[in-house]
Image (cartoon, rainbow, N blue to C red):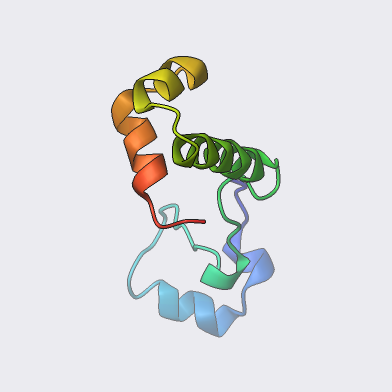
Length: 89
């Protein structure tokens, strides 16, 4: 997180208003929700997990057991169950 001096980026009237609530402390101002990126959207990690989960679902629906999938993908049986019984498709 980058530190910025409020006096250099905000109008004086706004600084005076903020000082009614907080002075001399670091204040975090969050991004607008619209500016947030979903986890993995930039790195491609989310896409890779979605593809893996789709392969797991397809294998399960083809008759492969949960135990075999857990060993094959190095996941717990509970995690495999969450993937195969979720409503994503």
